[in-house]
Length: 286
Image (tube, rainbow, N blue to C red; front, side, top):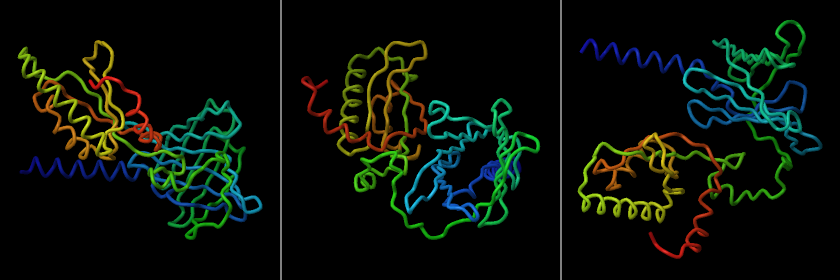
């Protein structure tokens, strides 16, 4: 019992540490003090923040850069993609210090080499960009509690359809979360052809059922490889628990002929739209 309690305490401590080392406070819309310059951040999950910086010019939104803060394993990276610069490629800055101040650094970049986000309180944070020493500039951002009224000309996309975006669950980038399933050979090495045939027939039936329920977006086999990988699914769900419940109804998985690994995947919210067309182009039902 003492061991279990100690383990739980350790897990809670690790979770608390992980949360305190990620700048969740950035969620929302922030305005630069005394200027019509804004940052907007959305939290996609526990380890990803997506944002963009924009100006208001004559009541119109003009985006200047896209922002991303992601945690992979224990490393947190800040990525800034400035429009019409660096051939559209993002610049990465690695988190080197954190408490209430988050310091991101890329010593190989010309300017800035260092970006600092310092939380002052729940409604303000301080930003500093520098070359790592004295050269640079700083400003204060203040939280906006009412959506600013403007004509959205992010017109990075003049074809934007707000009704369709809402229907598909797309965020400001036209993206959403899915679960990627990597199928691989399971532990059951049986040579029973009847079991194998019945199981994989049920496997295909489960795929078709999930497609009709709009839970399965992509399914297909992989070519021969030395990793025992057999195929992939992209499921229209957001959690591993939801994905596992759907997969446990797959007879090939239940019989141990297939196994799987799950990954969070962030892709176009329009992906399900291709399914209507896919049902019009096959001639032979597998």
